[in-house]
Structures are given as C-alpha cells and as structure tokens.
Image (cartoon, rainbow, N blue to C red; front, side, top):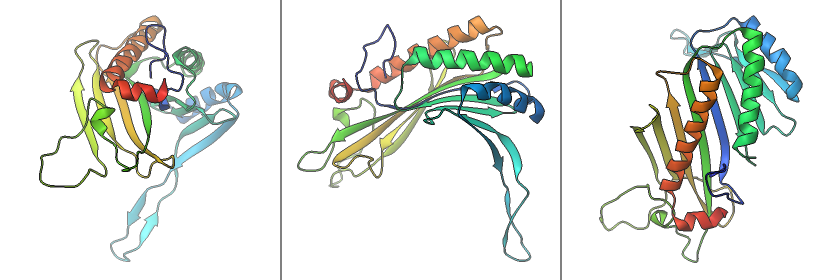
Length: 250
C-alpha cells in the first residue's frame, strides 16, 4: 500500500483497486459530458455508453416490467482495461486496477483528465472528494487450513468463547472521522469467499476516505488535499497490518 517517497516500498503491493472520485456541486447536461468524453477518448482505447433500467412490479399482472433505459454516463477504458474513467453528469471517478503502478502515475492521470474535463464542461466546483483503496491479503494455508486474523491484521472481529470451532469467515465495517484534514473514514475488512488463489485464504482491507466540507476552490489546493488524503490512507493501512502481513508483499 505504501506507494510514495515517505513510505516503505512494497515489491508486491496488495492493492486490487485504487479510486478517486470528485462529486460535482451541480449536475451537467448530457451533452457537456459527451463533449468531455470525446476529448478524453484520445487517452483511452475504449469508450462505452452506460445506461440504467428501472424494473417495476405490475401489481395487476404480478409481472416485472422494464422501463426505458436511462442514460447514465460514459465509461472510458485503457487497452488492458486497468485504467478506468467514469463520466457522469454529477461526478467523475478515476480508477486503477491491479497491477497498481504507484501514486505518481495515478495522480498524473487524474490531473490530466480533470484539466480536459474542466475546459470541456466549465465545471470545477466540487461538493465531495473521495479516495478508496481496496487491498487483498493472500495468505498461504497451513496444514490445518485455518488463518489467525490477528496474526495479519490489527483490526478484526472479537468473539466470546462459547465453545465454537474455528471461524470460517467474517465481515466488519468501522466508520469514524479522522482527527486531521476533516476527513471521514470507512474501513471494511473481512474474508474473501471463495479465495481467488488455490491454497490460500484471502482477507480484504478496504480504506475509504472522503471530505465533503470546506473543499478547495482552486486546483492547487485540490491536489494538495489529494496528497494529504493519500498520506492518511497510507497511515491507516500501516496501522491496520502486522509485520506478518508485510512479509506477504515485501
């Protein structure tokens, strides 16, 4: 997870997806979003429209009926489909799937695409900034095919001794504000079922930071905020893992 100059570098970072979202203060017309998508398409191999269909239950017939598809936005993908940009009338979402190439590369793409978007749409006012990093810890199973969560994570479930057998799975969420930069944290962790790798157990550590008040008015302040959020994300990650976890991806 540590991917910058001020943190230890991991040779096999456990990041499965990194995402940054800008929520706009007001919605745009579809035509403006399409205009921005057309200009941004030169950086991406694929450009696809996305639609959403509402399904309703007809009380008289008892049948489920589909309404007309509504335009949702446009999705841009790189050739290998690891770089993703979701364009909506009220938001932009930048995503990078594994293998994660580091913050510098991800940040450069965000700044590039935001500049094109801002010039094409005229929209620059943001009501919320979100940053989410989803990590997966793949742990080789021993002879007893069990994993001690406390051996790898400093956050996890507590369960009283009621004579139960070994835990086969868990899921938990923690919500709390951070003490700096007016950020809100949502932390999700749990077992991945089924585990993606044969002979392994997998744990997820999902760190979601956001800020929706006193947001930057200018781009310089926006990039400063993103860098601060990244540092807090790294700090939370490091606090949640143990030395045994670090050995998995060092």
